[in-house]
Length: 336
Image (cartoon, rainbow, N blue to C red; front, side, top):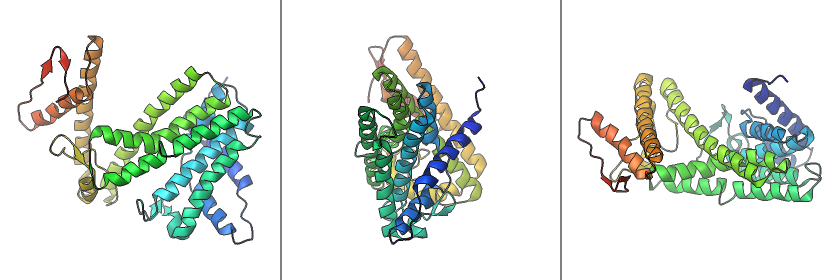
C-alpha cells in the first residue's frame, strides 16, 4: 500500500472539508444569508485543516468510512473557526487581520461576527448529531459530549478566559502551559479522540490518542509562537504574540504576561540574528532541564518542576557571570 506524504494527505483533508462545506453552506437570498456568508468567509479563508487532518488519520486507524469521518472532521473545523472569529473580536484580541485577510468583524461588522461564531459552533453539533455521522446514537452522543467539553469552560472557552486575565496578571510557565493546553490543545485532542470514538475504539486507545494529541497541541503552540517571533523580526511587524516566553523572568521567577504585551514592539524590532541566538539559549536551557529530569527518573528519584526550572535559571545566571547553586535534600530536587 502506498502511503501518501504529509503534504498530499493535508491537501486531501482540506479538499474533503471544502467539498462538505460547499454542500452545506449555501447562501440564501434572504436576510439571514448575511450570517451564512460570514460563516463561509471564515471557513473558506485558508488554513491548514490540521485538526481535520488529525481526525481523518485517526479514524482511518479504525477503518472508519470516509462518509462518517468527513462529517466529524468538518464539525471540528467549524468549532475551530468559531473560536477564531470570537478571538478576533474587539472585546478579545481586537485583531484586524486573519490569514492575511480582514477579520470577520472588519469584513462585515461586530454583531455579524458574533452571530457567525455562534452559528459555526451550533453547526458543528448539527454535523455530529445527524444520523449520517454514525448509525449508533451512543457514538453520536459521545462525539457531541466530547466536543462540548473541549470547546467549553474546561477547554477553549476556559483557555480564552485565562488568556484575557493574563493581560493584567503575572503568569509562570506552568500557568502559560495550562493556558495553551486549554485554548489550543483540547480541540486538537478532540480531533484525535473523535476519530477513535467513530471507530468505537477501547478506552485505552482513546486515552492514548488523547495524551498524544495534548502533547502535540503544546508543541504546536510553541511552534506557532516561535514562527510568529521570527516573522515579526524579519518583517518588522509590531503585532506578535499575547505573551512573551523569551522575556527575562521577573521577581520570583515569574513572567509578567501584561508587561510582555507592551514589550512586543521592542521584540519586533530585534535583528533576526539576535532573535535566533536567543532561541538557541532557550533551547539549551530546556535541554539541560530535560537531561536533569531524565537523570532523576533513571535513578528512581523524583524531580520537581521547579527543580528542573531551577537548573534552567542557573544557565541564565551562569551566562551572566553569576554563581548558581543547586539545592538538594535527601537526593531529591526540592521546590524552593
